[in-house]
Amino acid sequence: MKNNIQHIGTLEGPLLIFGGVYSNFQALERLMKIAKAKGIPPSNIICTGDIIAYCAEPEACLNAIRAWGIHCIAGNVELQLVNDEDDCGCNFEESTRCDLFSKNWYPFAKANLSVESIDWLGTLPEFIQFNYAQKECFVLHGSYDNTSEFIFKSSPWASKAKQFGQLGVDVILAGHCGIPFYDNQEGKYWLNAGVIGMPANDGATAVWCLELNDQQGFFDFDFQNFAYDHLEAARLMEQNNLPKAYAHTLRTGIWDNCDILPSIETNQQGLPLLVKC
Picture 1 (spheres, one colour):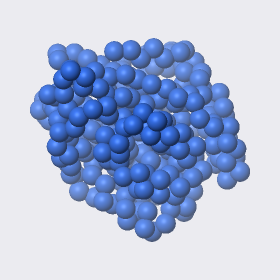
Picture 2 (cartoon, rainbow, N blue to C red; picture 1 turned 60 degrees about the horizontal axis):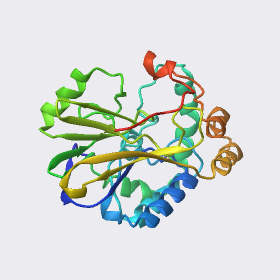
Picture 3 (cartoon, rainbow, N blue to C red; picture 1 turned 180 degrees about the horizontal axis):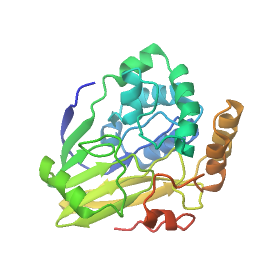
């Protein structure tokens, strides 16, 4: 898959941004209903990648995303699947719990996707760029230089500022790290919608997305969480012999481990998220 940027022009009206479906069809189905109820058309909806991961219904999620007709970039899991790799590409440290679990869920996902679905993944861009409320916006997964890079609220602003400089944009919409946050400095906005396929390690089973608004021409954003049938998603994971620890996370809102987290985010485990602009 080429390192490509898809330019989609100028968007207007409410935008729905989400990521990390993680093969969780119950969460995706609920989000689709929310978007319909809000009247947000597919042309104003963007997924930040990792449609596929931990949960039990990879093919159903891909089919739903394709039929929905939204904008979507490839996350590291999609890139690995297209390239027929044997791991998820997250670069977990060897023998950590995340590494061991990925040796279970990634082969399951790979074995339960049709050839047609993997071919479709190969058509996804790695990045999307568009103009919104007089700001230039850029969608990426981890970072521009490394799709698998974990960037959090506590990550140094200097590393984020470097990417704004590289890209010449005002807003970066990111995914991958699993926890919603924003960082707004120097007139630039780094926004991470979080993921819908797993809770945000905050002790709640609801999951997160992001809505952008351009009322009266001004740029505004609002993080939102929503409930879905997490018990069914957990049951299906266990039925398919996927990691029980991740099924437990769906039921409790607490991650099995904090291997990927910086110390600040680790210390926030189980605390309610206050993501306000």
